[in-house]
Image 1 (cartoon, rainbow, N blue to C red):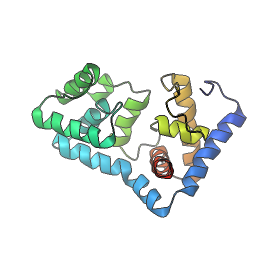
Image 2: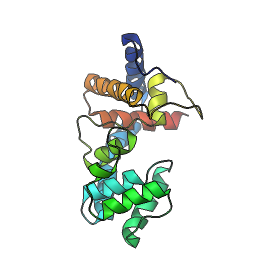
Image 3: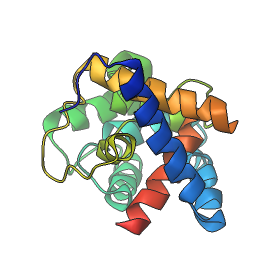
Image 4: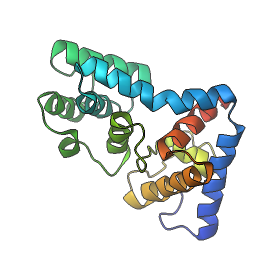
Length: 191
C-alpha cells in the first residue's frame, strides 16, 4: 500500500501519472469520460421518476463490488419493485432508506468512494468530488495492484489520491470527476 502521508515528490508523481493517462487518452475516450457522470445523472433522474438525488443515492448505495451494468440493473429493479434486493444487507438497507425519502447524505459514507460516487452522479459538475476506486488508485500509483489491498478505506490515503486528482484537474482545466472518468476509461481499455 502507498503511505497515508506522502512526500511532495510522491504527490507530484501521482499527479503526473494521472495527467499522463489523461493525455494518452484518445479523443473518443475523452468524450466518453467527460460524458460519463452526465449520462449517469440522466439515468438517476429516469429511474427515480425525476429526483437525481434519490436516483444517485440508490445507484451509489448499490454500487459496491458490482459492475456498472449490474449496478444499474439493481437500481432500476429497486425503483420498479419499490424495494432493493440483490446485494448485501447494508447496501439494501441504505437504498431502501433513500427510496423512502432519507437524504442520501444522511445514509451514505460521504467522505469515501460511495458518497463521492453519489455526489458525482447527483451533480456531474461538482468542483470538488472525485471517486477513488481501485482503478483510480492504480492510475495514480502507475501500477496494477490486481487483488492486492489498496487501503482505500483509510481516509488519509483516499484524500491523498483525491487531492492528486484535484491537482490534475486544475492543471488540465476540468472538474475532478471528469479527470477520473476519462482516465478510468483510458485505463480500462488499455488493460
